[in-house]
Structure formats: C-alpha cells, structure tokens
Amino acid sequence: MRAWEYALSQGTQVLALTVPECGACSPELNPQRDYLNGMIRAHKAENFHVLDLHDAIPYWSMSEEERRRIWIDGYTLQRRDMIGWGL
Image (cartoon, rainbow, N blue to C red):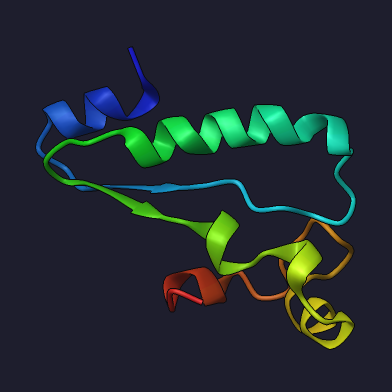
C-alpha cells in the first residue's frame, strides 16, 4: 500500500511533494530521486495533488544569490513557509 492510499480512502486531500535538488546531495542519488519524483508525478487519484518542488526550486540552475535566499546549508530550506505559498 502506498503511503497516501489510506488517507485517500478516508476522503481526505493529499498533497505530495517531489524531492528537490540540493547542494549537499551526492549525484549518485539523482536516479533514485528522479524515480521517486516520477512515481509521485504519475500518480492520479481524486483528491491527490502534487507540489513539484523539484521543478520549483532547481538548486543547480539558481544564482548564488537565489540559493542563499532559499537554502540554509544546501539541503535545508531557509523558509519552509515558502512551500505553503507555492514558492
């Protein structure tokens, strides 16, 4: 059973977040992250929603200034409330 199946079976809303790139992550983890994100993006169900953090905060495509504004240390978001704002 997927983690969200129980919640969906109870009629609740589920917001699944994809895993973003991070500066402190080993490149060897990229295929695993991409696989997980693909599974999250591909899932279709009533009341299931996706917030694609991977696309919204592309660590390696950002300027150094943007990284400092968003990330504390390369893997911790500076302002987690940004997620609630949809970044």
